[in-house]
Image (cartoon, rainbow, N blue to C red; front, side):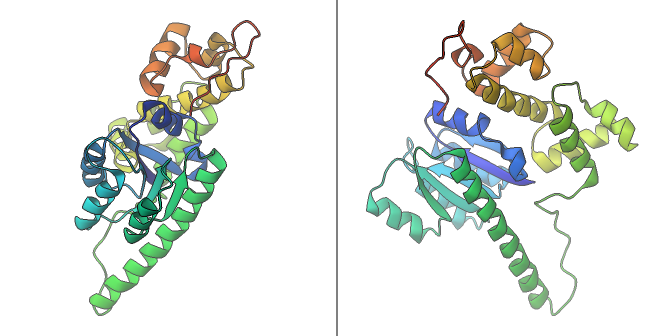
Length: 265
């Protein structure tokens, strides 16, 4: 599972990236988001994401400064710059920092997906090179164990499959643990270790992502989408949606047959 951090100061754009992009289809998960460069740098240090997608201009520390500071700390990640500023000087700075790609807003989902998949390929190449370098430096002695950043753990794979296939039902860590014949506490800890999210947070994030897609189609009313995405009541759906997306579901809903113009950035 590829771990992504998003740094973007505009809330609507940040929420759009978080909840309208199908990250799970790319075998990726957004482990954190940040509204400033300073906040982003702290989260890069603590979470060690594989990919950082950042705006260039943010209050205080810029996205490029954030990347530079993280690189000084020898933190290994692939930086992708997202910005509406096409000034050549910014582009030159991005190139100097070995930014993987430089995207101008607005960026559609297919373009982001294409870049993330290419970044994943580069991550694999980097890991192979690092493994070879470690082996060379130790004269062929076994390298110390390092937890894989892309998990092929069967327990995590089973959890993710349960969410993807049954998010509208009621998948829970206890039932999965029983099926997998491990304790619920062990599976819960393992899931958070690999995704940096609790099972419930991951499930709700996936549900809200699906809800945004359904509401944006303008085919369903809010209460219909609430039921389709596994929420037992309209009130609960409204609360969770607003908490995770940053705006209420009614802003995307179909109002009595009339199409709303607003969609998330």
